[in-house]
Each structure stands twice: as structure tokens, then as C-alpha cells.
Amino acid sequence: MPSQGLDSQEPHIIVAKANLALTAMKSNHDDIPDTIQFMSAKILAKGDILFDMNSPESVEWIRKEGNHMEFMQGFGDMSKIKDREYTCVVENVPIRFHPSHKSTLEIESTNDLATKSIILARWIKPVEHQFEGQRTAFMIINFCSAEDANKAIRNSLYIRGKRCIMRKLLPEPRRYYKCHAINAHHVTANCREITDICDTCGGAHSPKDCQTNHDDYNKLYCVNCKIHGHAA
Image (spheres, rainbow, N blue to C red):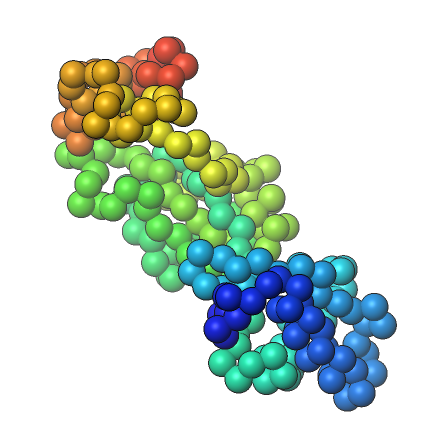
């Protein structure tokens, strides 16, 4: 939820304020979990607050529409509760697929996922940066529940007649965009490479000039692993 100007406050102050709002609600709700409690608060980069609660039951209760609206009023008039999102990478999706609300419903239906389980789907690399003749690309999908995300990871996703491997999006290590080395402990200006190194094929050219087909694994080369089969 938005930080409500609390981004300068210590986490324990924010947690205390949230728990006070819960306490005020207890007299109006017979079904509120006896032990419901906010345990921690973290201010995110965009200013939102990420709360941890003491149990899944507490989370489920606060998410109910009437309950979360009442909590929002107690915590701050401009507050808005946002469900946690589970972000995944889908590999080698046919580029004839066009991410949109309608197309995400198609993915849900084809793969037996819950309706509205996909919050957002988008290409990692903008369409205008895809090279001529490219047939597949990587896509980001945000799920609203861990259950649906895990189901899709286990079973893969079928998109436009192609089985696409999916995995959890993990934070990428720091990489230097001239040599594409990981944790090389230098800045681009001090890089020892004379020319740009391609992160797709390992050649001495800019990645945007690379003509390598991403489906041809034999031509992909990782400059960090020093092996063919995948890009850096």
C-alpha cells in the first residue's frame, strides 16, 4: 500500500499504527482472528509499504473487501491494499502472441489456471527492439497467487501452440554492459575490452547488431560460463 508519508518513519512505528487500526476493528467483527497481527513493515523503492502478518488466516481476513476498506480508513484515508504479486519469466514465447488482457485470459483458459490469476504479461525486451526474423522472445508474467505461479512453473505454459518453460524471476547479479561480465568489479569506462561484447553470441559487436537466432542454441554463447547453449 502507499506509504502515506510514513517513509521517514521507523518500521516499528508503521507496524504499531497498523495494529492500532486492527484493534479498533475488533469490536465490530466477530470473525476476526484472535491473534491477527502485523509483524513487520518494509518501505519499497516506489514508496509502497510491504507488510508481513502473523498467519495466512490473518492475510485472508484482511483481504476481504469490507475488511480491507475499513482497515484502509483506520490506517489512512488514501491507503490502498495491493495483493502481493509473483513474478515469473516465460521462455521462448512466440512473438505472434500479443500481451493484453484478452490474451492473458487465453493463457488462463488454455492452461487451466484460475480466471484473473494473471495480473500482467509483458515482453522483457520491447517489441521495437526485437530483430528482424526473430520468432520467440522472453516474457514476464505477474501472478496474483503463489499457487497459480507454482502450477505454471511445474507444468509449463502452452502459448499459441508452443510449450514454454516458465521459472521464477530471480534478482539478476550486477552485470557490466560492455563486456557482460558478472561481478567484474569495474565500471564500463574502465573495462579492458576494446569493443562491445555481445551477450547473445559472445562476438565483438553490440548486442543490438547481433543476428543470432535465439532458437539456435548451438550459436548462443555465455561469456561468463564460457560455453555454448545459452546467452549471458
